[in-house]
Length: 269
Length: 296
Image (cartoon, each protein chain N blue to C red):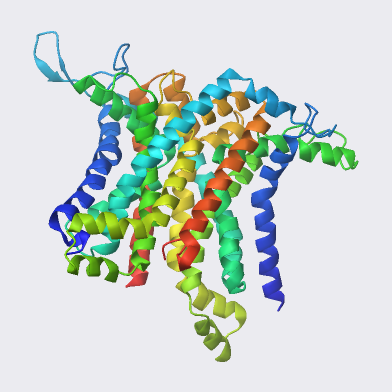
């Protein structure tokens, strides 16, 4: 089969295309030389310099706080939406909810960023709160963006999970809230965990929306990377990029494992 | 009664995410449109109210379409919109041409490899967009890896200009948006019944005919979804043209960014964004209609 060989070749070439540039950054980050094209030996000196850079460390702390908060918010909201979409076929706001969920997914980030900033400013003008922008506003913006992904992860899992256990618990006299906390949520825990990790990575990664919604004291890691990249490629940024890629890849591998074990689906189909 | 059959819990499970999205996803879009009719002013907030008090002490409508008139009068904006649409369209086409055979190969791969291959494709979708664009800066710049390798091999005498070109933008765009195309294509092709293609071949269709008349029509919804997922964000893309194209490639995302962050003109940025939303609404409406018709 010649055509089968051709498409397998394209798949391999496509995967190389997706991975080689990032791998080059990772390898370069261990190069002792300041120049990218010259390999002068293995070294972790750029990681050492990174660890003593207060600006990067502050940005990293901001990013981690925002990502953890945004992921938790997104998980709470997305679990509600995913559950209800999977378990209730007809409810009044179903179409509206599905439509609203796709807004953050399809809008260009730059429009989402500006629109949320205008909202925060308008709310501040009207209610005097939040005063200025900071970690909290970025958290809310990222949670809005990420809850769609949590919703899809929970929905995909809940569709495939049998209802009999919940029905059995209800028949034996457990009130709905107890069934929810003792049966439904524990069964969905892998998908909820996967959704949290996806949201965490998404928030850690975002530049555009954070640039619009953050304040002067809440520079995030991607914002710090972006401003130093504009000044040129530096070995320190290579080291930082490597750390970020490794952290996201680890979160994602964990999410994929949580989502696919015991026959779960990676993507809703 | 299971949890979601209980009216109270169901109401909470629908209401919380619904209200959240209404306030943080839908309302902000209305605000963009509203503020696009204001004017820039010094102060907090940096835009004029739509209803203000005039010289006679009366409350009066102060909004206007000056921002839109400005966008229409300065050819920079029209050029930026058209160029963004052109670059996004070419990116979408290139991504489709690369992603279709990739998705097809994954579907045809042995069952036990499929999940691993899918994870391999999805991983870059989630790992640091910014870092993946930055990776290309390191490869493409004059003393970057590609140029220094070519020079060391004696292929070129002086560095090629790779960075700050339109070529670099296409490379970065296809690279970053490829997984968005792959996912819906894969989801669709996975459900496609191979026996239909086999039947076409048995009945005398050539492989080319079977591909165009069976595989493509049946995967059409996946193609449409993938194209929209690439095209819509690509039109408004900022990071890729900012880092890879320099000043000569004009895109609306860059124009809007500098309108906002450099000129601090919020109402004009909002007007640019509103026009962008209108531009994007056209392909979405057209394709949604076509796919719902072909589904009927």
